[in-house]
Length: 280
Image (tube, rainbow, N blue to C red; front, side):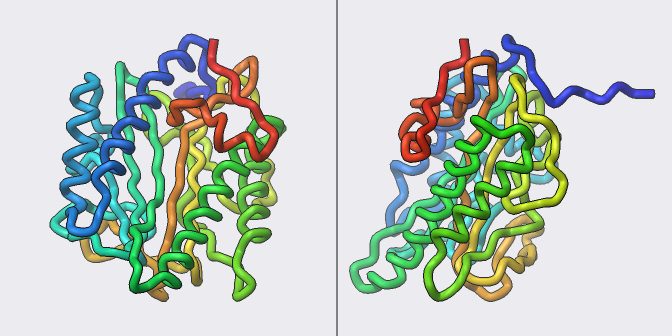
């Protein structure tokens, strides 16, 4: 009978995950720096790829069977898993970029959302920016909860509570149910699942050695989605815009540390009264 791999890492393994997290963060920043109307999503992919290669790492997205790119670039009604290509970004677009790097056998995974300015459609930009801000805030609420949680289920409760408290008066944002966060380590996707909403099962225990990719995926309208004909891109059924934010976070003896944030998550966690502690 095969032994089940533990979801908890040793201190040495946690230290080994710091560099792939920083490389992932740098790759996303390389892509972010190019985001502008007239730029193609394939150009963003090339920038992230070049950074990862220059740092001596590999794109872990390219290790997923059938996927050939370094990033996922999802625009407007595309929520996650959008494929880079010849699509040209336009003013007012909401764009989510997801990327990951493998370095010496360990993985990082992170995502952000950005809204391109559009002076002719300020209302559209404001609506999409609020969606992104709430999605990002819910991610940090989930990460902050991890600092004191007894079980992983508390993360999803914190994420959903934040989204409900900050949704517009016109209605609550939709939280994708079919796509959730995950453990991360030797593989990009490991157990356990990290739900972005309340579930009755409290889930595994939160204790030192746990590393999670916390990634709320939120939409303006209904949470129902479908997969486009390309077999990857996940879009909303009702055509409303989506947002995706993600960080890889480690729990260790002294606290938590956001592996895919250069400051360990200090700025994002400050509003929640949580101070991240570097992995010794």
